[in-house]
Image 1: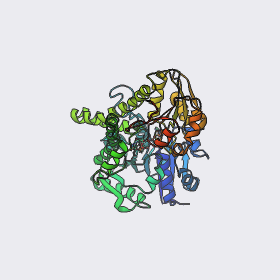
Image 2: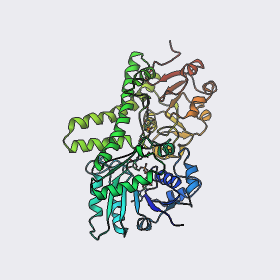
Image 3: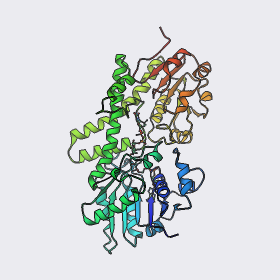
Image 4: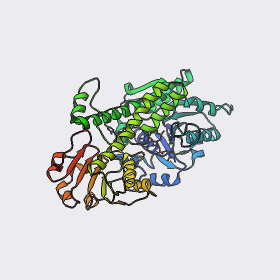
Length: 459
Ligand code: NAD
Ligand code: UGA
């Protein structure tokens, strides 16, 4: 079959795999290939057990795989044979050298740019799908145009806004698709090619076009705004705990203001995930570099409050449990950084588990999807950790439950049954405010939510 367009995604991770699957599903006339340096991951994408757990993803991969969606390890071949290349490689925080702990580590991106340069024999539209520092497109253009042999490269910025756990829906019905291009005839031509791809399923009024640097910055700014809301409500939760106000009530009242809106106001143990912290620190680095120290401090506070919230949660546990956790078994309900994903990158549960082990507690981890990742995250830590899939068995013999992830599963458990098998006095620390606190208190637990008064049986 002759395909109308040939599209390549470099990087078969949380973004590359689902993005390719969505395009292939919505555009059967296009051939979409995903390549990765990680052979094992490509084998998983070609198997029944995908490397990423996302509701609805199995179905769309099954529909298109082998028809017009292909997962492969041949990167040079992929570059040669495709015209539009989405770069979806990871851009973690740099862990070495200048800017360590703050700047983006661009080695994977630069390697990709050089691979494209080495293997391309015909014009390519190179699309930045990963989240990059502002002005990365300029560096990409400079590398790609260093060969000067007449092969044309156009670089676009098309940042991804999907959230894990809802990735399929977010891509299928996005709030907006953003395409940044150079303000030139060639830039507009390349941009229009990408607009036509998305227009197969996204209404045109939701496809925004902008200057390329605005596009790169808007992605970072969007994550900053979202994370800032979580840090703000978490800071408010600390005040609630000192004043007997209830953070859920405060959030509802504040969120009913049309200018503020109700979403992203759930107080928690802190935000996790691979992007919020890294993207904010990336902005902080840029601001410091550009002499914007006040702005950098302001942005950085969002991350600092997040660290504070995680530590505050542990200190609250310690205080409630008579200032010692040594030898006590604590069960973590959930390990994923949010519900409906197996991803544990930067999960607050990692921090809480580490701190509990430092306090010489025994940790039992339960999670419906993330136990394998939890094992990797906690490997090598001193102390006793066990992993139990069934939450009833996991909590049995423990003195406390700490809710780390807002899995629906945990709302519907029989807490009377759980209480009976725990060491008394038994505690629940609800780091997500998802349980029925009155009910848990009634069956015997001492209950400590985030940002509201505790319900205890102590005089
Ligand atoms: P990931 O780590 O899950 O996947 C990245 C993949 O790229 C890995 O499989 C890696 O092996 C591969 N890779 C690295 N260098 C390569 C190379 N030279 N050639 C081929 N493959 C290579 O990362 P992710 O979560 O998919 O994130 C990718 C980018 O998208 C990041 O910049 C991230 O900030 C951004 N983003 C992520 C999300 C999300 O929800 N995870 C959402 C929006 C944006
Ligand atoms: C986030 C953004 O929502 C996406 O738009 C963006 O594309 C993505 O980052 C990215 O760039 O990687 P994600 O991290 O997958 O998506 O998940 P979110 O739903 O944003 O949750 C992030 C963290 O904040 C989670 O730990 C979540 O539990 C926490 N959170 C969220 C709260 O604690 N309270 C809230 O009210 C909302």
